[in-house]
Length: 156
Image (tube, rainbow, N blue to C red; front, side, top):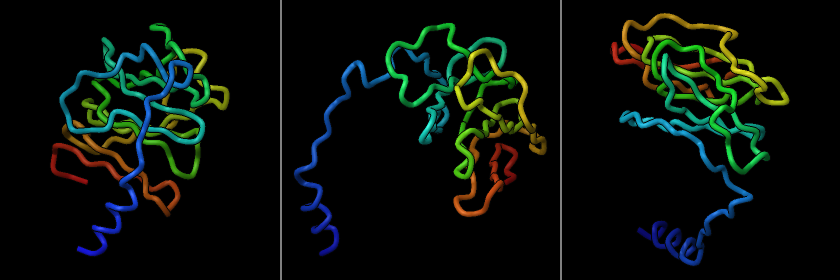
């Protein structure tokens, strides 16, 4: 209990304030899915947000320092046949991101250093092994190129 009291005192006078318009993203069409996932992932270069789309799933990749209004026609990563359920950046490569979907696949994407200029539909690698939708993915924090996936087929 002593440790909890010290933590409470330490954070007692910390207050957050909302970002201004010029330091935030506006008009991002986020997903309306009901799964318990994050639907967003960030690294030092980009932020990825799962979006609502027709004919499969997709997500936006926005440069972290280019804030402001996001146009509806902004290029997307859209190679899944089902809704995207999770996205995670590779902790060892700021230009590599993994996504999983209701189409039972996990895909690894290479994002150009300058960001997306057009829709990205070709993944570097498509991982197939689950028989039901893949809900959660996670990169190993200390072992390079090790990715965990968990699906509704009760397999990891």
